[in-house]
Amino acid sequence: MNRIADLRTGPQTIAEADSLMAEISRVEVAAEKYQATINVRLQKMREACQARLAEFAAELQPLQQQLGDFVRSHPDLFQKPRKRKTECGSYGMQHACQLVVDDIDAARKAVVAQGLDDCYEEPPVKLLKKPITVRLKGDETIPGCRLEEGDTAVYKTDPELLKQARNQ
Image (cartoon, rainbow, N blue to C red):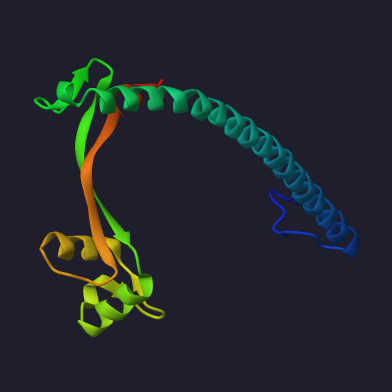
């Protein structure tokens, strides 16, 4: 009688099991070597990208400074409208409000003593800027905290241009 199929599965002897283990080891070592090679390449790419992005940032900084200087020195050009729109984006003046904490200990004690639970997290007492800013804008007083308000020069590159750049 001829065998149509061998119903045995896997190794049948210690020599076959040793051979199977050697094959498993060979494949795992090859995969690990490949992963290590990829990791080295990715790290080199990350470093090159970081260096190139630093170059862009260095190029961008004086341009931002010049545009900001122009806007601040010509506030009359940015009254109505406050921002000038171009095909690349917009720039101009914007009202800004910033929380300034002059005395952090007094502020921490005040928010706890006044029961302003939305203004801090525990432990230790960590001040939360957004709710404190909202309360100060609502004419509440929190010792050690104040708002600084005024116009600031701003710009924004057209988000559609940035999206197109990402999708190229």
